[in-house]
Length: 253
Length: 253
Image (cartoon, rainbow over all chains, first blue to last red; front, side, top):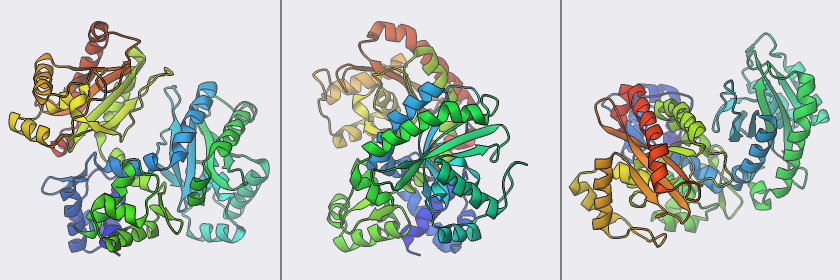
């Protein structure tokens, strides 16, 4: 692994929620030798991405620049933002846009509800795809062979008593979502949390992203969610699919 | 320059608003040889941070992970967010928290106004410090010697007819801001845009960040801005300074 790849792997440890790292933590977390981990951490500190207090390395604001290399460079989140906000204003609920990053769902844009009880998912956040409405929509773009490979790799855990953990049943839910044109998460990720997601496809019908609304299950049941939110999500996805710049789509697929 | 530092310098070119880069662009933008730039770009593509279409490299969502290494790892933006939102709800205007990153102001948290006319500054966005209310508050933490060095490096441009471009006058404004406990930007950055900023200091009195409100100058004049917004900003800054975790402050300074 080149020095660049090693250093980025260490930065990603912080993205997984670590607030500080020792040399030993970085070595363990990435599988690097302590010497290699130490060199990378010191380079990151020299470049101003990490602070070092003699024992722990801490993330510094300059790291934001690296993330915004994506948000500034890719028109997709920019183009999507006003569409997300318009759906948020009509539903009052949090609206998200997500893509697959490896096998994980990665949120790339959000419009946040004004309720006290909002979902904790943030732009840059990642979740396993199979247990989410958004993820099932995105896995709908996988072939049967890709799905088999996904389930051979995936760690499937029951987050709640409602979580479907049988791969055959999850695959059936993915197929059903593809046929329906939407997927639902009914408290499978967390009790009290519900979501509905629709695919965003470009003008050539290719799956680009998933648009979703997530909210407290105390505020809406599955039926009214489908009646009230689904048409707004579908409208938004259609608009977004039409305004997406062509040259960017090629890079996403 | 190590491979890691080179690769990060290339990623930062996208943060400056490039939507795509050729090998030649990356070499020119970083001062690397074409061979070195090419190796870095290909490593970044292999690691899933960039897409390559045969000519251009494009940023991929995985880059977000690197930025959120900061937002997930540093408690400051998390602790600040509800405070920013509370001030936003009481003023109706956009509230920002910023730190210095090198000589630039870097926004690390935002609560966005619901007006149609909102400011375009985003988390991860950067601006030259000297022309902003936020920047003048943060430059207030520089010694006279550090300020001289800053002005010897800074590119000072008149964005509007109101922009102060004389370093002596800017220094006087910084000193005045330090004495007042707030700084004002009265259409110096853009006609029609006004802002007021206050310092956030920790329990030991060290300058940690700046808290600001920015809005259309059509909605408030300087006097009512000071009467209405300043007390709310000062309250918020005091609260934030008190709840900041001690161990993190050490890494910011």
